[in-house]
Structures are given as structure tokens and as C-alpha cells.
Amino acid sequence: MIKTPTPPLKSWPDAAARLVAVAAGRSPADLVITNCQWVNVHSREVLPDSQIAIADGRFAYCGPDASHCIGPKTEIIDAGGMFAIPGLCDGHMHIESGMLTPGQFARAVIPHGTTSMFTDPHEIANVLGLYGVRLMHDDAMMQPVNIYTQMPSCAPSAPGLETTGHELGPDEVEQAMAWPGIIGLGEMMNFPGVVNGDPKMLAEIAATQRAGKTVGGHYASPDLGPAFSAYVAGGPADDHEGTQEADAIARVRQGMRAMLRLGSAWYDVKAQITAITEKGLDSRNFILCTDDCHSGTLVNEGHMNRVVRHAIDCGCDPLVALQMATINTATHFGLEREIGSITPGRRADVVLTSDLRTLPIHRVIARGRTLAIDGVLMAEAEQFGWPDAARKTVNLGKHLAADDFAIHAPEGANAVKVKVIGVVENQAPTKALTAELEVRDGLVEGDQAKDVCQIALVERHRGTGAVTNAFVSGFTYKGDCAVASTVAHDSHHMIVVGTSRADMALAANRLGEVGGGITVWRDGKELALVRLPIAGLMSDAPAEEVAAAADAMVRAMAECGATLNNGYMQHSLLALVVIPELRISDMGLIDVTRFEKTDLFEKM
Image (spheres, rainbow, N blue to C red):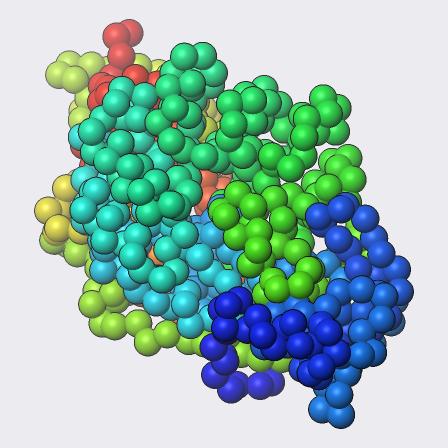
């Protein structure tokens, strides 16, 4: 494996003279790919018997014969008749969801053909503020692939309904727009703020637009009437929160790009791609993305290659699916002349594959440099030195006890009716459910027969020792058990779900001890631990190690009775107070249909 530093990429103006000379045959190329089937995403066609010449990390010539570009030192790669497709682009994602740093994330996805990512580090922003965003940006800029950073827009995601470790506003947005790797504004999750003309949200959008950059959207509401039109008028240019065909259609009709996501737990492509395959809408306004993929998915299933395969399995033409993961994304972010296609002048990001439907990734070239062959890294991604200040972020303020997780019933009650957060498998939204529960010794008890267990949010940024308690359904836990995580979108306090208050306390204290991560307990013993020491969100260990620990965590959850597909991802989103219907925050139980706090108890 090559471990030489990533060479700097020349800008197009700086490389233009040589690119012209190579294309004209006056100067030799660095690399020529011969005997390939050129997948042209501009014309949506496959051009057989093609050759591609590369110089200074960019494409110089693409056509039937590049022999005039070959010199005595030119590297030749015979593609053996394989398809040459552009490097894959992820249009919206959070690196932190992989539980990896940008460098380790790049290392994990390069063998799967991903060469460009558009990342919103709002997870670390909620923990470390602008300082954390800068660390992510700087790590990303070191990598041998293109990692563009979107400045987080909403920290907190819902002001007044949660308390984060740090807050960001228009001043921070304006400052970040000058950083070299900032491509735009991250997803505007505070959609009620935009709809209601909140000055802070509009100022962040204005700062982004003045910089000539793209505003990311997040409209997590089924209301496609005037409120949706008001949101679009406010500036967001894309949206990935659609879950049905009508959502995708509404977005493109209003001039947005509809981003269809397939993450570890979000399966929203199949329900929306019919807008193209059945309704015949213009596919150039649709983009594929992952949003959230944990390390196990990356190691065991893939990244954007997985999403493209899935879109094809859902009935999408392979060339259309490839456009949605390459040129459509580049065009949306104003980078069509830089990435997203195999055409002269663009960055030489190309993937060789033997089949356009199953998409096996045989060779990955980024900026003209072979980075992976048949799943094996040939050039190591750069690893950033993360400072100690980013590793000491879990502050519980005290040693927690079982009593901290007790839910006291109203005076004199023998039974109560409570609101319950209902997890929806494979989707981000939850349901607002109710359940009648027993009271014993003045405390409300969960009911395993009804699949109702406790959920708690433990404050971990300021060491207040505060614990918010409520109930959740969908995890089917049995016996005495608990799962705790410092990954708790988006405020990233600590979420603990369990059937035993004693085990919940043990799990919470364990994460305070190790500095963050995920832990599973049963009958007073730890079954699994994923250490995430950086901001309580990420590890700088290799993806394979983190994935192995995450796989053990998933198995431990199953031992406790969990049957949900990607139940951990559902766990980590239970504090996301911008997606309906019911969530938990450090301020209490939140009704996200009304964007207000709500009582745990209902009248019997």
C-alpha cells in the first residue's frame, strides 16, 4: 500500500495549458486508460472502445484513440472492456454517522467507488461549535478524494426546545463561507423558523447566497401546501426528507432537487423513484444520497455503490441512476466543470466496473491516482491529528444512580396513561403513541408485554446531572437491559433506553468513564462497547475495527430482544426534535407536530 502524501491538485486554470497540450498530442499524459466503455453522463450513453488520457490529476482527452497522448513514461491501464464511470458522489451525508473521522471515513468508502462527498458536520457542531466544524473541514481537506463541507445551519436544530454544547449563528456562517472547503449551508432543519420568517435563519441563508453557495434543505413535514412554498421561497435548494412519491414531485415542481436517500436505516428511494420511473419527471432534478451510514454498513454493504444498485433494483435505468449519483450532484452544487463526469478538464475521478447493474468496483482512481483495486486500498487516506480538546466532551456532573431514571406517578395514581415515542422501522419519523401503565410504589413502570420501555436523555455537555425520562416503543427489549449512546442527534447529549433503571445507570456511567460511545448492558453486565472518544461521536480507529465493535453492539441489542432493522440508528435519532412526531430533549418531551413541549401524562 502506498503511504505517500496526497499530492496537491492543480486548479483548472493552473492545469489548463498542459491539459490542452496533452489533448492536442504535444505533451504526454501521466496516465491513459485504454479498452474501456466510456459511460458519458452528459449524453446518457455508453461509448465502446474508448480511451481516456489524464494529466495533472484531470481528464485531458476522452475519445476513441488516445495514442497521441502516450509518451515513454505514460502509465497505461488496460480496462479489459470494463465500463468507466465517473467517481460516485454522495449529495448529502454526515460523516459522524459512520462513527469515523473524515480520514477513516474516506478510507472506508474509497474502495466502494465514492470519490466526492457533500458533508454536513452539524453533529460535531452541536458538541464543539465552530471549532469542531473547522476540525472536520481541515481533516476533509487532507484527503485524496473530494470532501466538501457544508457549514451547519442549525445548532441547535430547534431553538428553545433543546440545549446544545455550542450554538452557531449568522456570524459563524459568514465566517465559514470564506474557508476553502465550504461548499454551502448545511440542511436547514428549522423549517418552522424559515416558514415564519425567523431573522436568524434568513440571515444564515442570506450569508450563504451572498457567497454564491448552495443552501441545503430539510423539510420534515407532510404539509405540501403554503408552508412548503414558503420554505422553498426562503432559499433551501434541495431536500432529502421525502418519504413518498408526492414529496419528490412537490420538491422538483417547486424548483428544488429531490434527494432520495438510502442510509443504514432510511429506505426512501423505492417510494419516491416512481416519480421518474412511472410519472416520467425529469431525472436530472433528482440526486441520490445516504444521509446516515454507520461503519457496519460501509464495511459490509458499501456506500454510494449500494445506493445506485438499490435505485436500479427499484426499476431505475442504470444510466439514469448513475447520473443521479454523479453529474446531477455536481451540477446542483455548481461543480459541473469540476467533478461528476468523465470529460476534459474535470478531476480525474473514475471507477472501472464490469457490470452497470450490480456495480462491482474493480478499480478506483481519484485525481488521476489509483486508490483501490478490487476492494483493497492501494493508497492510504491521510489521518488528521485530533486534539485532546475534542476528546474530553462527556461531562455527566455526577455518578448516576437508578433513582435518576425513576418516573414518579401523579399523587395517588394506581395506573397512568402516558405518551410514548413510537419508533417506525426504516424511517426517520416517529409516531406519537399512548399506553396505560401500572404504578408500583409511586413509580411508573414500563410494560414489556406492550413493548413499552423507558427512555432517558442525560445531559452531558455542561455537567448539570439532569436526566429527562419518558417512554418509547418499538425495541421489543426483554428482561433487564439498557442501551446508552452519546450519539444522540442533534444535541448529542446521551440517550439511554432500557427496561431496568439499574442497568440504565450502569450504561450511562460507563460512557462517562470512557469518554463516549455506545454500550449495551443486561443483568448488570456489559455485553458490548463501541468507543467513540472524539466528541463522543467518532473514532479515529480504522473502519474495520469500529465496524466489528458496532456489529457486536448490534448482536448484543438482539440478545436483549431488539428485532428492528438498524435499531441502533433509530435509537440515536430519538432526540431529533425537528422530525415528527414525538421526541425527547433535555427540556422534556417534545411534540414535533406543534414544535412545543408536551406533558408525559394524559388524562385517563
